[in-house]
Image (cartoon, rainbow, N blue to C red; front, side):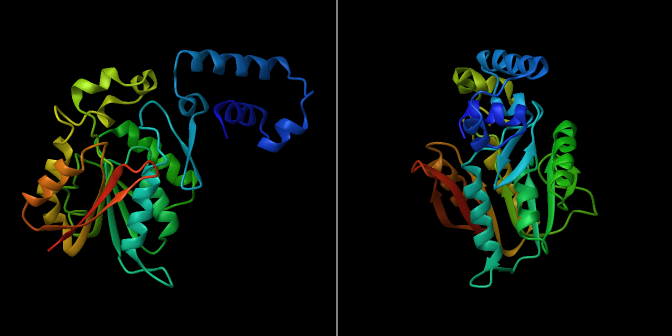
Length: 264
């Protein structure tokens, strides 16, 4: 659906088809005010997801607020990649028992994995208490089970300081100086979820350096990348100890989007 359809179906609590089957529908004053207010916010370039307080990801509905990064369609490729490495065809039964999601934000990755891999233990971290509050709401909204931990990247507490089969992250990867030059909608999103340092690679360096201590032997580190970062991220892996790169996966726009590495 386009943005107008998303707005009207949400406020009128109807499906897309009903919008077009009832062209003469008269709106009450309350609905008119809601639509007017939403349109004014959108004219100020506020993302439609924040206006509606929700976004769709992997066929699930997620609450989103300005405390969390808005889930993107390309990140679904990250989840689909994890599923391939966590299950075995043709049965697609889980062959891995534990996954750690670093920088979970809205919880869209962790919750989706929990729904699709109900027998796998999913742990998710974030440095933002506000983001974790939203993620926990999304767990309840989607009837999923995820252990959320307030932490900077990896979990340091004894209870969760274990080794995982898979570590996944969609880290902040926009270079600091480029953020203010992006489309106005980006300014509404939390900077902490965007800023990847001077070259956009700070979190890749930190995660790749620390991940071997938190991964089982032959476990996987699977990460999303930004535009034109493939060579740089590959270089960080190649200069690290204990990883081999297995695959780089393109998104629907033919951009290198997901990198898979294995602990050796």
